[in-house]
Image (cartoon, rainbow, N blue to C red; front, side, top):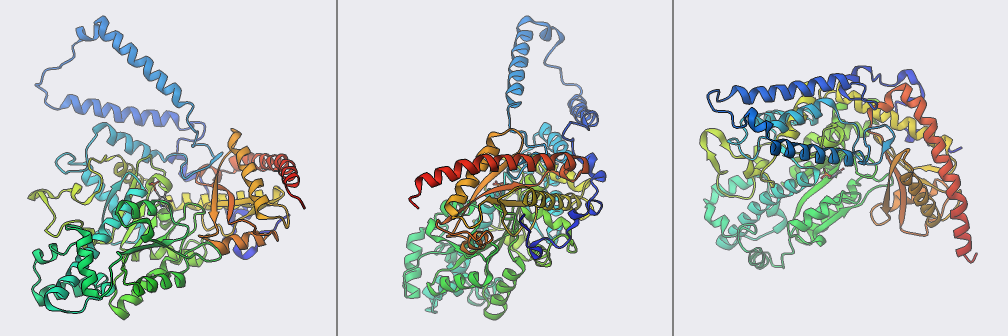
Length: 615
Ligand SMILES: *Cc1c(COP(=O)(O)O)cnc(C)c1O
């Protein structure tokens, strides 16, 4: 039996005691249920939304003529077309029955699960009206709902909901890109000013200092020297030719300008590489900060990378920390990152953009600052999300909303301006700035906003609402982890488990990592081939997190002969794991299934290895 290192376990240990686990009863109205238990109620709600939509259309423009008559509808061709449509619809619906069932507790593969009913109903209601949130003209209500939903998310993470800005996106990837867009705009203004002062007044140009000057300093220099908008535009790397501007920066600073870098932790989501690529930075400009032995961003390492950039005369476009890493659901020490950046600001007047990628874990802020199930360091980190300049959060992950529902939250209006030196374009003065001027996407639905809004208005984004549901998933994850660790031979849990994702490998005591990787991959392949349970596979690279891998391999006295660690990953998002009946039935079945897969693959893996190995 493998005993989990006691001090690595979340502090609550609630799952050891069934009665201490979160009671799901108050939340059962919020999900359909694995057996469509709430079918009758949901049917009634969907029907009433449809009825209202039909009625709405009938109620408007009462004197307009109808366009489809009873006689039209009785036409054989009409009926024939309807029949064809009905048949193809049936075909589509039939095909969709082959879709991955992500709603049952058995599904622990990726960051998706049972949908919350308020999210589904809100999405459905907005879908029927089909507003386009790119403009207030095309979306009179949808844009208001969006503003309110953004304020709800802002409040959850601790931004001042009255000052915060933001909008819904198709997902975290776009929200991350949008954060880069804003940070890049601000940096461009600072650099243009620095270059202007250098060229026109002969002031020395320190690229790093200029790019990171505070807003206060930026405004006071503009006022002091009466710098015009035209003078800045003429030196913009965004509006002008970036290569020409870079040449001028190089001339004034005394060394070639190599452009900014973007620093994110080694376990970052691949959306960050895409961002570096899309913004034309070159993937070389994407720097990783080291992670510590438990796989979280190492602040000393981050500080060293910032200094490295400074030494090379390259500004830091932004620093990214992660709340809820995609692989392991881990939470970076966001508070310590914020402390370090705040120290640079007070000590040296250097303002570096801090973005928190909380696409997955942002909703854990709903647990509140006192949640005993989280370790104090993780609580402090979540509490510091509010100190970021921008935050990505995906309601289509832990707010149980349908796709495509991501969001970018921006601290305040100052951080929300993008891509233009002039005042934001105003489509009609009385409507305020058009949403599309601040979004990368053009036409956007109101569905995600409506889904989030209805979750906020019902379940709520506090510790008694979504927070309690998420608490139950963390407990369930702990319970599953414990059951598997105790019940499945050779299963090696990866530490730590900050939230509701847990990873493991399969390894014999003392064996080489290459062999353990083969075993783990073989077991995951069995899981994938079996219809019973879904878990995903992830591979950690020793380049990104060497100490984490070493620590894991040491836990079974193994030998690290290769530079990657293959893991099985369980995302325990499904709320029904908190139901004692579900747990009592499915946990032993899960343990049994894995025991069997491990046993089947153990023999095969060992034989293959022996026959290939000369020793
Ligand atoms: C999921 C995720 C993303 C990307 O979000 P999408 O909604 O898939 O575009 C980015 N960062 C992290 C940490 C994520 O978990």
